Length: 212
Image: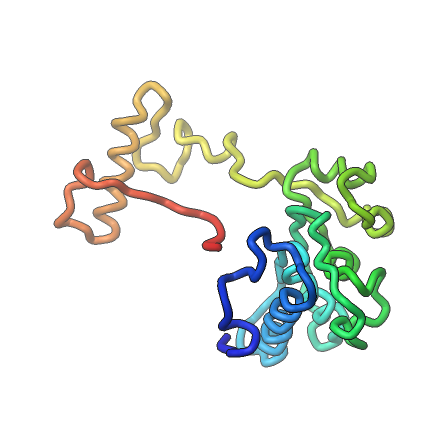
């Protein structure tokens, strides 16, 4: 998506802490959400589930929710910090937001519109459902409590266990991890066609996360 007004100034976030300061930050992300909504409307990609994160893409869930042509799409909102509410003024949240639980907070818009709400740990979900750390959004959580399911960030170490992982050519544990990891690294190099590189001689980094 290329846009000089909204998407070509500064980094991913206009504020250092990704908080909504004034209307510029919300306008930027609402523009992005509208662009994604138009992509979904075009049918260019076949979509059944849309997964948004925090207030920044909550507006997209509202657009999908009120679009009858997209009623087949189910939506999920991951909540990393409910207190980062994405507060905006009335002139920004125009008639497209009619009927939401709180037209000044994009996080509330997302929680209300989502089919499922996923706080980033089971404990955080329990805290929110007890009214802790809600910072004024207690009523939104209360009205939508049935949607909440805490899922911890990271991996399930009982499932992704190298000592019994069926996808590894050679399993390993804490006792023989050096041999096991070298075998896995060597197999990866073979698969990717990196035959001119000696696996033990180079570092290999893997990254899963946001580049932001």
